[in-house]
Length: 370
View 1: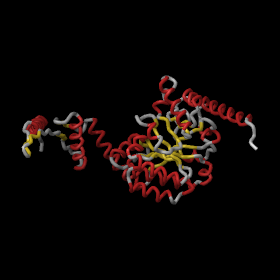
View 2: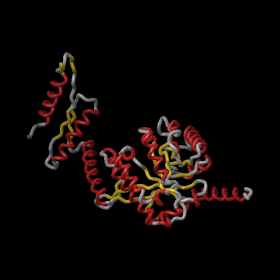
View 3: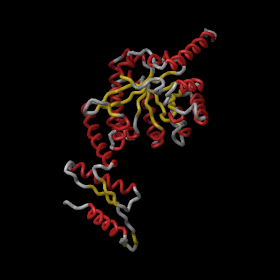
View 4: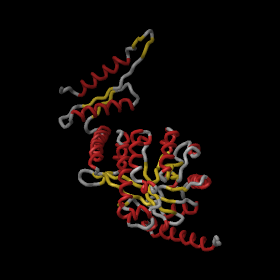
């Protein structure tokens, strides 16, 4: 109690040195051991839980700095502040799961071949803070991933989407497909899989409209279990998309293992497609491969009209990004006849309409089949 900072430093350094300088002998073998020490001052504003969490964070910081060192954090330290804020976020997330205070938004996925004849979107989860403001997704999704809460969130998203589609049958029947992201934690959790298929069995009509997005890293973690999941959801009429394609090192290998309907081209290639010839060439290669394998392509991060024009030129099937449409309330999407109706940029609208007219003229020019 009331220990001066210089005394704390001397004590913890003596502890560290006494352990690291004295090797242990066990069964005739000499073992050298080092120690990482985290130190925090217990402030009057700290709860016991926060104090323990702060000490744990300081110790983790000592390990990340190379081990065999002492790290002291105080309440003004940005690292500690960030950690304590995340702990509060996690507690808030747990309450939200129980009270259903999440909500959904939909981001349109626009057909670049026939924008006004297709209605598709990605389902996105959102969360409100205590003051009613919307918490940035990166903050609460990251906290959920690091603290083992993604399976609970994925359950909520899947259940809410299935219920929403069945509660709006006219929209459901008009819908081409709606994509849902599944985390690696969920796909590798047997309890989640059992719960998911229990929900799925209650909504057979909605399931024919769902497309499950699976990232490469998740798929490769256990290709066998991922394949079993894919086969089961496809038996219900659902589709599968391989997300962030091209971001990893072995993408082309696992295409043979997983029967997918869509390839979502990683946005890092799409964003600079008009400024980096390599990105243009890579995107073209992925699109050609996708079509050769009988799949459809979706380009993420389509942010500008110029990008959309290049994607159309390359023969990409669908586009998604702020240049086409931002995430929006699900009620607004429900009223739309097509994803093309939700595009607001006049330049992009013109590109899509021109492509629609070209498609119509091609159909008109083709001979009728008997």
